Length: 108
Length: 117
Image (tube, rainbow over all chains, first blue to last red; front, side):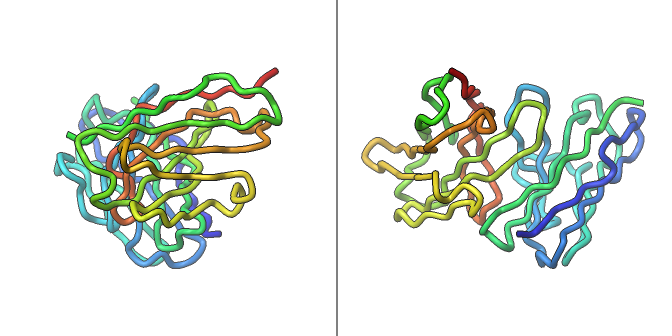
């Protein structure tokens, strides 16, 4: 099983600032990496797939980078609606698909 | 607009079988994509349960494989989850979702299933 480790667990950021979230895989997942945003009481929303491709309707302030075992999600200028929990997920090895433990982005 | 909606009992007794259905609208399951189930225990992270291709091929989390069955009914445009021999550890919000590459682009709103006597 590929273990996905996200850091930090909590990120305190002021509105308008940049947020950088990390995700590390226990073995290479190539570029088969997705990022999701989840707000309280809601289902996760796909932000990024293929490590760096924004999903339909996702604002340009969200960007993803990395390949292999190290990945980054960057939110260039945090808006009020961006405070949420973010998960990475690998889909290079399907059995099983695995998610990271999440990073909570909170208002500083 | 693709929409998914989970339905099923919100309370299941220990040792019984959890059964959920996901109704899909705005897209025909038989046209393609993978259709999956993901769960989230209260206050915790996401766990993949399994997926089914429109043709019927299934992929299960090895940790749950002995207890999970996912099936598809293309005539009703829905797919289903059965999880047997449930315990309190299976209490979670259960989501159904659609995937092209196994990243999930459309999700249901989720349904809380509590395992308790």
